[in-house]
Length: 180
Image (cartoon, rainbow, N blue to C red; front, side, top):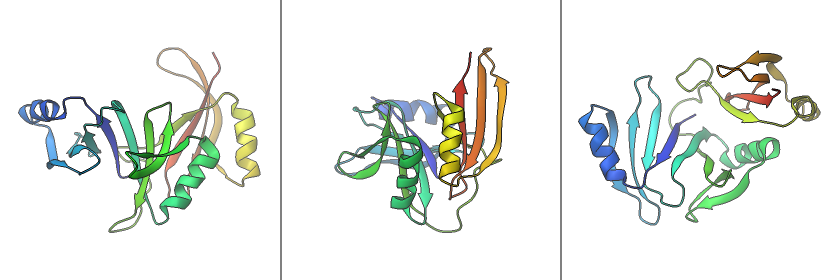
């Protein structure tokens, strides 16, 4: 897990407001030609956040993973969780979900890939309609469960069935079915 990204229509005003309140800015604003303006900030728990101005995809914009083999990693996620293979502005290859949230995978840089469990960004999550059927699909693909299945009640009183798996790059993934 490298970072998460959010897109704002008035990116420079958002960054100025954050600077004024003391947000830790990791990288000054820069414009990537043919893509968008961007910057990086860090939340109080150490999560790196990319802030962009992409008027087509506003709000929660993307999750960016790192991998030794980005194409293989994207194929793994597409095989399990679907998504639409696409490119942001014909440049960044990824999977698009719900008409706007992107899963991007870049080449691993310096150092080793680090597991997400227990870090500031502990896991990704996907909702499925039928968890038992999804578990059968996982088992047919020889993907082992990390924990679960188990039933829980979330903070707003909804009943959930959940299970966790771990990707080949050690990204912990929660798979959820809403049952009530």
